[in-house]
Image 1 (cartoon, one colour):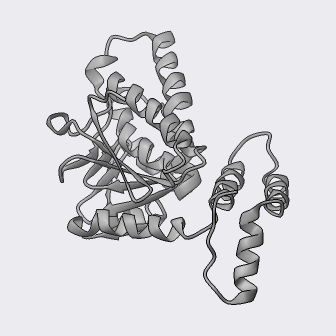
Image 2 (cartoon, one colour; image 1 turned 90 degrees about the vertical axis):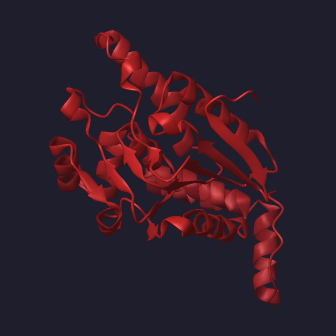
Length: 260
């Protein structure tokens, strides 16, 4: 895979992805979004990848928004197509990936950057991180799921406050309102993210994927989340991993899951 704006490496079952546009504070442009779309597919297809760790290059920004210069001249139809394509190929694709995506927010996560982090399954932030959706200050609204995912994470009132004021919040406040899972010192961010992934790697891969599908169903129109949970729960009984996990429990040993 020939990547221009994203650094990619697999180590110990983790696909490390670093958005590498430091001079632009890692802002999302068309090329970066296209590369992310490829990488979501790639991660899902690789048997040796159990999780993805996504971060930004440097210590200033995770992703400080979208590259406005690329769409400043768009009309309504072009803007809608931009949002729809990004939603389907990147943001929704990450959220519905069978592999857990962990966002390590190492600075500014604004606009499309915060939307990217919210599409991930777990978010860790460095103490210096600032998060916000400032689109209304540009005459826009969030277009990559920000209005929906922020509301689901922090509630309608806080989501409206953040979006309508276009203000940023600190990492500490983001943790308090449930926008991020943990806040750690900058130098410990990647280490802590890896430790979270290592805990997930000890669990049954098929059950992890089933849990992602069931949790995602809670916020999807036309889908009964309880029915989805029941279905996924039942399917787990037909897996070798369930036999191994239950056997290990009764035998008081550590399970060795194979993902089948």
